[in-house]
Image (cartoon, rainbow, N blue to C red; front, top):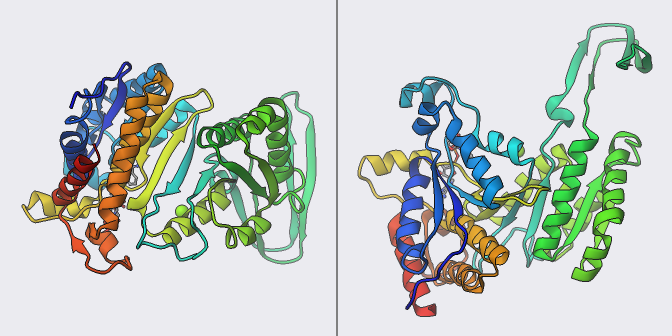
Length: 402
Ligand code: NAP
Ligand code: MG
């Protein structure tokens, strides 16, 4: 069989620990035998980020902006322990944070569904994708403990010195209060990312907030989404046969339990934090979640939703067998290859991405899976595979499909 050619390189960001081991295995077993893989390679391993004063992360993000599509391996975010362990010069920032702020993106996470690993909510037949706004609100709040009677106020001092003040509460006794903020520009880019993503996967978009109670703050989120939809996306949504609708966050949660899935759910920062943990645990496992950063400028960065699986890596270093799940890493590659193929009109690449995903799902559904899934599956006759054995089993399935 002739290998599939690529016309534009993918930006490849390598990472750390167990996921770095998996990364190489996936390339060797599942990609390069079938594709003339063209990538622009950036080594974002912790030591290399440290040696380059984190320039390598910035260069990788710039390459993502140049070519449009990247695939990223999980990376260590340094802390004091890691500084000692890797003998680092400095504490570098989280690479995901650096890349996210350069691409100005929103992260979308969706579960990978397989038969035999059923969501706790039985009627969820199709994936539900969460889009979480990752700026401001309670994560950047200023809060105060009040020890006794007094008046709590919020004051805005305009650039020209004019003050606007409002009483929050006349305290008769001890209590607490806080202030928080968001920016129109951030909400607008969040809205555009959600509308663009829903269009790219051809799924309905739901957005929920609490504008009946928070008329100004949440009201602004609702208004910005409505305006951007009217001005920029209404016709595109109609053409794609999908819909946008806004409802209250509590109504969203109630509806969520009764749907069969298959839509994108946009949520404010805190709601997204809570609901994404609920969804990922209800759907099964972090190793069965896809994650993509979508920038309003049209850049895409695909990754796994989990970390570097440190505990398994130390076992691997000791020469012990591991059973680490590579599904999310493989889907990061297939997501990136499919998007690259779509942008380049390369149908062979798009088809390959689909086949590889089918091979992964068929392998798990045949009972061959890693330990994390074996613990939660309802399938009989499960064969617990090693990290490498699982990837080889996927290759065997893929070969029957090619
Ligand atoms: P983690 O790597 O996600 O692992 C947490 C635990 O979840 C593992 O110990 C393992 O449980 C299970 N797990 C996660 N992925 C798995 C997989 N693919 N297959 C099987 N089991 C899996 O999180 P962490 O241990 O908190 O963090 C490790 C490092 O990753 C940290 O240095 C952190 O900075 C980094 N991190 C990076 C990213 C990113 O780059 N996107 C995200 C999160 C964390 P058992 O040990 O019970 O088997
Ligand atoms: Mg959380």
